[in-house]
Image: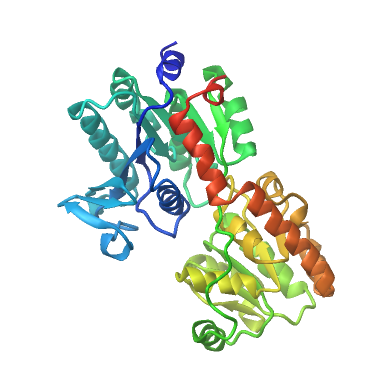
Length: 420
C-alpha cells in the first residue's frame, strides 16, 4: 500500500525535483549517457522540472566537464548543464567492477542527503540500470518519507550477457528482482522488456510504463567530400558503398555469425566493423574462420566523432545489426535514422523497433549470406523505399522531442500511466 499511496500523493502542476542516478556522465557515448544529455537539452527551459544528475568524478567513463559544451563548474564537485545541477561522485578505482555498485550507492546517499537537507518535497529519483537492487530499500524509505517516488529503468537482460560468470549473473538477476520490487514505477525502453518485467515479477504487481530510447534524425553536417570522411575512407582502404556494423565487439552481438556469413556471401563490397577492442574474442574468430584472409572484412577500431559516424552510416550500402540482448538499442535507432538498408538479427527487441522498415536474418547456416546476396542486387528504388520507411519509423516513434515529452508526463503529471 505504501507504494500506491506515494504515487497518488504526488500533485500535478508543481515544480518537480528529479534526481537521476546511474549514468557515468553526460555525453554522447553510452546509452544512458546519451539519454541524459538529450533529456537535459530538450528540457533546458522547462519550468516544471528541476534536474539533479549524478556523474562519476574519476575512473572509466568519468565525466570530463571541460569537454561538455555549455557546462560550467559551480563548485569543487558540482557543475551546471542545461540548467541542471550535476554532482560528481568520486569512486575508489582499485575495486574494479565493483566501482559501478559503489558509484550508484554513493550517488543515492548524496541524493537522500540533498533531499533531506533542502527539505525537498515529493521528489522523483530515477535510477538507471538495476545494479544496486539489494541495497536500495533504505534509500527508498528515506525518499518515501519526503513524499517522493523511485522510478527504475531495468535496462536489458544483464544476467544474459555471456561475459559474466555464473555468480555475477546470479547477482544481476537478484538485483533486478529487488529493483523492481522497490520501484514505484518501472520505465521500460522496450515493450518486450515491459512484458518480461510484468510476467517475471508478477508477485510484486509492478507498475510499468513503456518509453523508448530516442534517436537523432538530423543529417550529418559533413559533406560527402569532407576531408574528415574522405581521409577516414583512405586510411582504412574502404571503397564505397560498403556494409557496416557499429557496436561493442562482444559475443552477444553475434559477430561470429555476421563474419561467418559475410565470408560465405558473394558480395564484392567491404564489411566495415567499427567496434571496441576485444583481442581474445578476435583471436577466437580468427582461429575458427581465418577472417583476415578475406580482404572485404575490415576492422577499423572506434570512431568517437558523432558527425563522422553519422556520415559513415549515411553512405553505407547496408547496416548489419546482431544484438540479441537488451531492449531498444541506440545503435539500431541511429542506423534506421541514417542508413537506408538495415539487416537485423531476428529477435523480438529488433522487430519491435524496426517492424517492416528492415530485413531480418537468423543464425542458420547460409541464411544471412543468402540475404546479403539478395539485397546486393537491389535497385535504387528498392533501397529508397525501405530507407523512407526507416526514417518515418524513427521520426514518428523514436525522435528525442517525442521521447522527452513522454518523460515530462511521468515526471510532472503522475497519472494512470504510473499505476496498475
